[in-house]
Length: 200
Image 1 (spheres, rainbow, N blue to C red):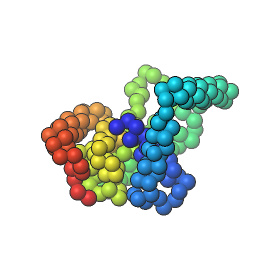
Image 2: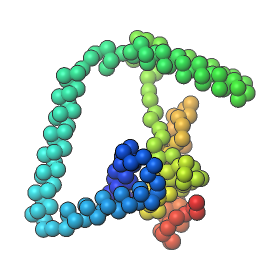
Image 3: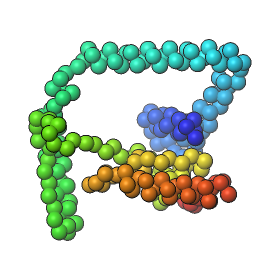
Image 4: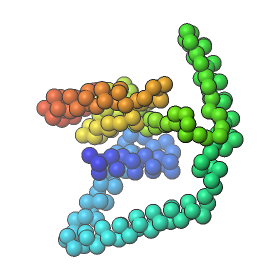
């Protein structure tokens, strides 16, 4: 599953350069990457070991390059405080959120935008969500209601990436429920009859 998700991720990166890439092209890229991996790995264990060492060294060089770049370009005000534009963006987005809430007829709408300077004396957090959105249409979502990939039926993506937005409270409780839901479908539906659990 991890390898298959890697193929999908690679195809999604290709989409930045191949504008208008559709589902057929995405599958073609995934298949091509998979075939290339098989060709690269279809050799003696010693050769695969050498290839692994080369990739490992390449990874270390990349990591050290990123760490070095971070040291050379380090700015404490950016790292440890909110830049002025961040505060302006927070104020703007908060005001828009209040405006939307009132337009929707909410009974109580409050908005307190982020203020500087940064302090650990108040609750600071972030809940990153989105990226493999759950939905009922493969054109506008990545996974179906069972968190199964629309494009690759044997890939299930379980995580906060399934949310189309960040709710006002912690996502973990709902994520736990979604996990149980997906595992139940995987165990009691998919394993008995592998394939798409939801027709598009």
